[in-house]
Amino acid sequence: MPIDKDPYGRRTLDFIDKLRSLTDFNEVSQAIFKEIEWFGFDCVSILTMPGPEPADLRERILLNTRPPEFTQRYIEKNYVAYDPVLKEVRKDFNSYSWTDIRRLGGLNKIEREILDEPTEFGLFDGLAVPNLTRSGAVTMFGPCGADPDLSPRARSAIELIGMYSVSALESARRKEAVHRPKQSRLSTREREIMQWVATGRSDDEIGQILGLTARTVNWHVENAKQKLDAYRRTYAVVQAIRLGEISL
Image (cartoon, rainbow, N blue to C red; front, side, top):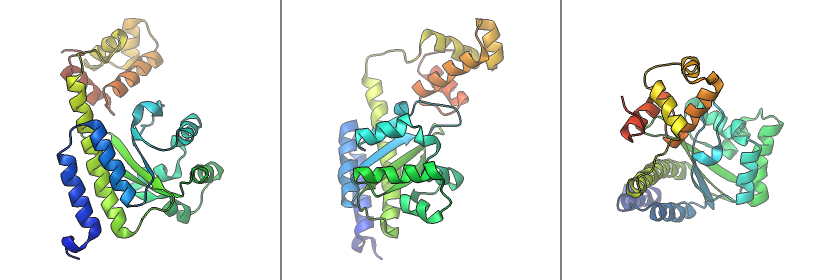
């Protein structure tokens, strides 16, 4: 179908063009909200996927308009560790709808609970779209609603919208950070430990030098990674050097 006769393709290209003209985080957010409404989505969550180590999900949320009570319940029950939608996404890095996961079957009790709870808030289906950021982290673009359009053409459009939305939001956030008053992101202890990490020392070695347990050292490193928006230690070191937190 020619692009000018395809409403999904035309809207998506127009949306991408619009994002390119926006630099303010709130303006980008509003553009995303308006666009997903056309597809029948009522809200959206965008977050950085946690790695294998424990992490506070609240610090990984880039944008979220899901009901506060639902979000709080999801965080408090640590659903991110058991979410069957995210589990499938991690397997092959494809997008999945909630309906897709139900059709796959084989869900245990907590997985069924995770899929059923959103219905209490009028959210009956959604889509999880993974994206890889420049830092190597995986972000999840997750619109949902009462009766969203999840036809093949709509899904393709949403996947593109998700990719460009995440990029635009992160770009806007970086611009805001540049214009904020200069302020250290890391604590004194975090900078001290990241300085040693940059030299290639292990957690055990750093702990012996500083009189800390390896577990405590790792805890400080993980906090530093979150503050530096880094998924891997090596990238956290690069970020810390770039931001002037440590030096070689």
